Length: 186
Ligand code: HEC
Ligand code: HEC
Ligand code: HEC
Image (cartoon, rainbow, N blue to C red):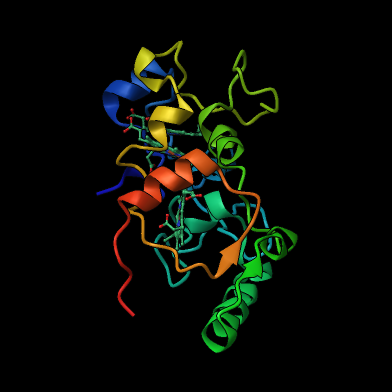
């Protein structure tokens, strides 16, 4: 099971809690300093709110699609429009319309916002609230994009049908993933 599907529960396990100097008696599951990275779209319109049932209808109670791909409201329609166009005319749509609609292709930055958000991090945009789990706490929390993006925490990949074309894509990663991608059942 990919790690990102674990439900919004920043309640620390005993060992890691001790290491990261978290308060053993505290309930962190409603803590705004934690939920930003342990749910989807916390503090943003339509995103996770304190009190939203974890894993509710919108499935925002964990790190979901929109955490990496961007809030879907602005680009969902572009996907269905482009699919219809491909079916009708065999034309693909410029991927730029997705960027305009807010779809994110800068995956390295998306990961960094959660995984590299601590003081002294190589990610220059780091700002509080920081993650309590840093390489200083344990070397296993060191985040390397090239390794992590190929790991089990990511979803499986499916063959893209050419609905979209052009930049921006992470070319090397895209090509590698597409090579071993599964056929999507219609
Ligand atoms: C800036 C983003 C961010 C914030 C803020 C954040 N976390 Fe996390 N948390 C992460 C990431 C990323 C991981 C996964 C780290 C890994 O395994 O490499 C993680 C992992 C964890 C884990 C599992 C660690 C383990 O090894 O067992 C716990 C527990 C946790 N966080 C609790 C909290 C609590 C409690 C807070 C609030 C005080 C919090 N987190 C705030 C990003 C964050
Ligand atoms: C919204 C915050 C967020 C984003 C964005 C995010 N992650 Fe995570 N990631 C987490 C948290 C929190 C965990 C800990 C497990 C959990 O709670 O789901 C985690 C766990 C992981 C793990 C498992 C760590 C372990 O030790 O088992 C890997 C690998 C990982 N993420 C890779 C990535 C990659 C690659 C990206 C970008 C493409 C990314 N993550 C984007 C928050 C995030
Ligand atoms: C942890 C970050 C992360 C999360 C969460 C995530 N994705 Fe992705 N997704 C990626 C990355 C990285 C790629 C590979 C980028 C590429 O091929 O250009 C990708 C690729 C894709 C693709 C292109 C085809 C493929 O399979 O590679 C689709 C479609 C997609 N994701 C949909 C989703 C949906 C739907 C969800 C939620 C159920 C989701 N993603 C959740 C990071 C994420």
